[in-house]
Amino acid sequence: MRDFPVEKLKPLPGDLREGALGFSIEVPLAPFTLDGNILETKIRLEDVRLPTIDITKLAGKSFLFPTNPKPGYIDGSVYIEGAHHPVDVRSIRFGRTVRDAIEAELDVRFVFEFEGLGDYRNTSLTLLTHLRHAAD
Image (cartoon, rainbow, N blue to C red; front, side, top):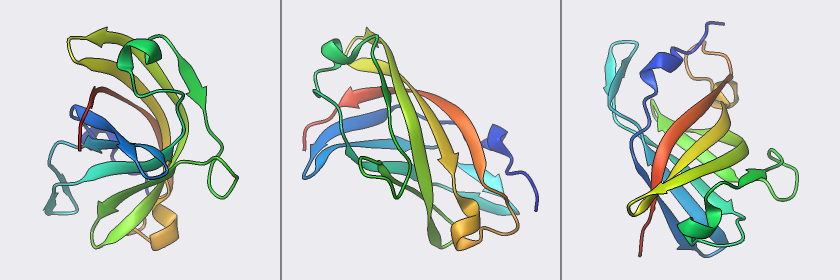
């Protein structure tokens, strides 16, 4: 098994929106090359249980989450090379608000071994991005 080249995963500003089962977060990734293929994808997080979608009230707060399959987990995935790979979110830390967005630090684990992404092993990292409250 080889390590996934995490330096290629560069989050772009994303969206926080109201969903059917709580809130959802979408974080696009800058296009990158993996094993000779150019990829454009995003991290999708569903059923994110937060007390509010008001970014001014989330500023400075941190939230811990269990991982799948424990109750309360965030249903996360990223689409790479023909498969949705699970993304476990262990925590979200919100920073300060900047105009209409909020700084967000997501502690995640990409579960590449579940669908078998090449011979890449599961990979943990912290993603830094900004989230806007997006209206549907």
